[in-house]
Length: 44
Image (cartoon, rainbow, N blue to C red):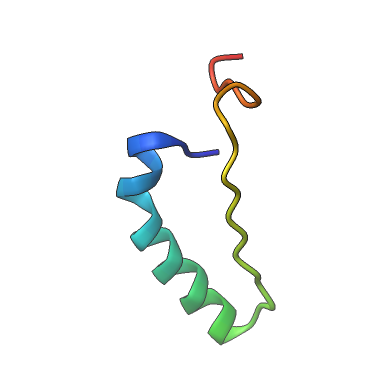
């Protein structure tokens, strides 16, 4: 799970990798979620 700046820096590369794999042999769907920090705390 990525969040904040980690997500912002990684998402472009992840999209390219997922789309390359899905085009070759997999039926992959990419989902995004906008979760409030008060609901999700990555330190726990």
